[in-house]
Image 1 (cartoon, rainbow, N blue to C red):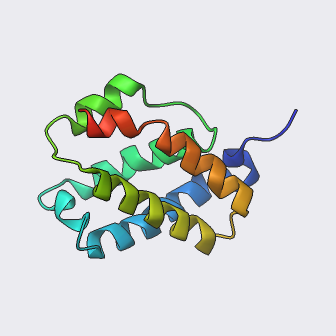
Image 2 (image 1 turned 180 degrees about the horizontal axis):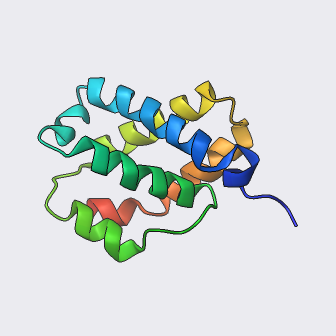
Length: 119
């Protein structure tokens, strides 16, 4: 049986580092950074670590309903989603994730686009 990307790249230890680096980028970004004003960042980073782990085939912690509820009051536009996707790809590249594996993660993220944009 083939290992999940989660296991292939080191499990929660690596995913945690990826998410921390991603949030460094997100908070500095003019398009998506403002979404994180007045947010409990330690709590968010914990949730996002679990979410990214899920995208990488790790333990599933979030259902579609959870994702919709978490974003229902945000005015997320396609530009924001696309920018986040770019930053995810950039961050995964920094952690030497193989291009085909980055595409797998981005496809899993893209599959959830309607949950955020229609929320």
